[in-house]
Image 1 (cartoon, rainbow, N blue to C red):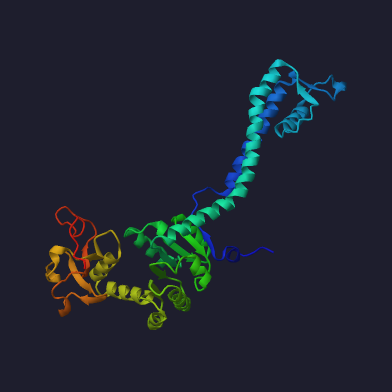
Image 2 (image 1 turned 135 degrees about the vertical axis):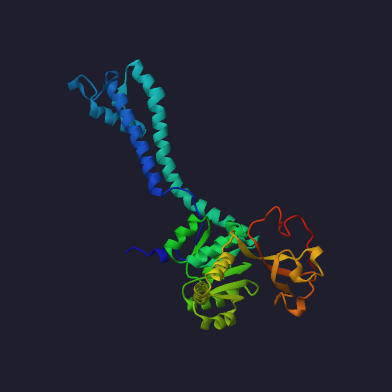
Length: 364
């Protein structure tokens, strides 16, 4: 009985591989071997007068097409019974300088295919070991669920400077596996509510975890499991229903985004005020028009009011708390503050973006 894909690959690390389909590789090698066989048969047959069949005295030891095929197979396979042999100088020269290289190539194809099959498992284990070593020595992000929301989250991370090699996807679906490999991402195939699967993904060492499955109950259980493995990780969870937000926060989520309500509000805004809806969509689209970004405070901005900066400051992060720009607590900016700003997505010569020209940062 065939084993389901999810059971065959459960908990397995699957790294992106640029290699072609194995069927394509096998077909290519079979065609090459067939070409060598056919080419050698034709060489022997066209020069059959230079060969002698020692087991066929009834036909004056002559070689026909069937003999040519027989001689080619036993020669290329190095069996060499010796019943058919080249006797003319030309036939011997062809054997030495043409058929012998063909024999070597034929054996290389057979042995190479076998060795590749045997070595592929070891090579994959080595790649996974190297990947695990790299993951243990650097910050990485675990993305649970690679649907529409998961893919959008990954593209946003990559657009903001994260390397694809630092992002690990956890998903049990074969389609998600193929899509993540196409996007050059490492994948852990399995159920993210299981501790062993999350351990394989390095959730215990991840700096951030993004949970975007299609079920709120799965998101809650995955959040609880991740928080037990990693008390310090920043966990962002997607909730389908607003009523589950508080439950996810109690489960250990650092931030919860309500997808259905957020989409509904954006649809409502676009209906009531098409211009406002367009601006909100622009803010959520990376690299075009306006963008919302977080940046460090610069030395020359210390002591100033948030409203006086080149960027449009909408919030200030101080002591790990977020304040609106008009809050009396952040009337004067101080060292260690971080800013949430709205600014142009592209740096313009006449409007340089703060923090991109080797300015001194006002960090504590």
